[in-house]
Length: 251
Ligand SMILES: Cc1cc2nc3c(=O)[nH]c(=O)nc-3n(C[C@H](O)[C@H](O)[C@H](O)COP(=O)(O)O)c2cc1C
Image: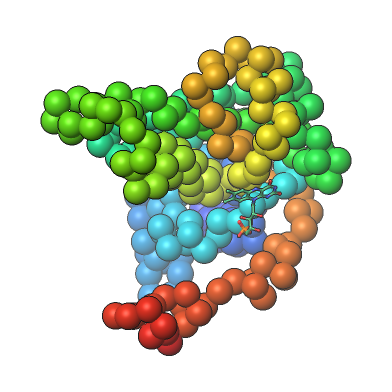
């Protein structure tokens, strides 16, 4: 249902949005609000969520480790998961799988396998969605053994990089970005090697599927601490890492 709102309410919602909280309690549907920002904004608010400029999605993305326990709308969960399937993959192998945990009882089964996160940032357990992306190497070896590809020996030595991890990482990033686009917070974090096998056993995951980490997604906690200033301080400049034309030609 479309609910038009007075301009004052829109502006207040916009300010709260800019301050880091999505005004999800305000149902807004506008086609284009060029009057929201001087010079005109291309931001479009839709019911209960905000589709934002891509550059803003990139700018706002950060790992969020504190959540409210507010549940996610099922369609939001589906959009986040669907976005992973839009990721590119070598040979379109799509050698990935995603364990999605939304039921509180299922999420509770997950947290013992990441004890450091539980100890350091216990509010991560409030996140209403946990996704474990899993890389499936066999799918790549099978795909490239097909006649059109011709790597019938299935040798891993042929691979310039383990693309099963690369692609599962790309899918993970799309989920992180989609969470931002939905006005949510998300975090990617590792599952340590000693916990992988017991984790597999708990959730019935076959040996050939390798978890690359896990994501939490949810509404950012009220009073979420600002980004660690160390992150911006340590962010590398293009001058340090971009080599132009020849290695060593930076800046
Ligand atoms: C592959 C990968 C593994 C990560 N593992 C963890 C982790 O185990 N625990 C954690 O708190 N953050 C983890 N992070 C998040 C990074 O610490 C974070 O991305 C980095 O500090 C930059 O901060 P930002 O993402 O908020 O910009 C991981 C990120 C990536 C991409």
